[in-house]
Image 1 (cartoon, rainbow, N blue to C red):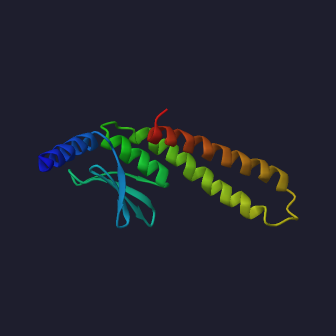
Image 2 (image 1 turned 90 degrees about the vertical axis):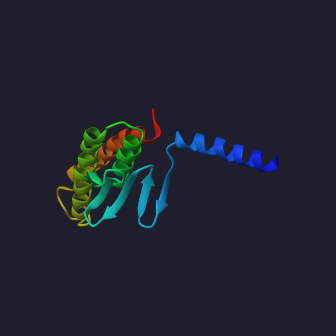
Image 3 (image 1 turned 30 degrees about the horizontal axis):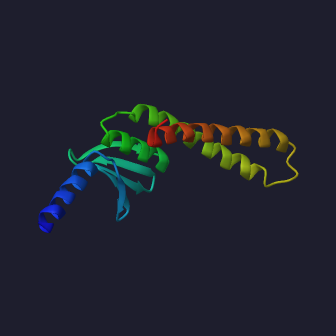
Length: 138
């Protein structure tokens, strides 16, 4: 009787887990159901392991995980996520540029660069918050 109960419990757990999307890491990749996210030298690559098809390439990990999670759930948010990813990439690069200019304290344009740095950081946060909504829901 105890073997039957253990088997029934395993079946209940397995059936419940099939409906839940759980990410896990394996080697240098993140796997969410049949979707794989791998870090490359130019960002993150997202693949569907069932069809062996490349889904997208992103700049940041948050975009890649958002695409992978939603694709595994049957939702296609690739275009929206890539738009937010481009916002993050552009403003991240801008922030690095402005930060490097501000390292020279005698720069006459320092005040305007500080303002532009803050704008770039705000735009990056805005895009990341939207990507987080794709991952964690609203």
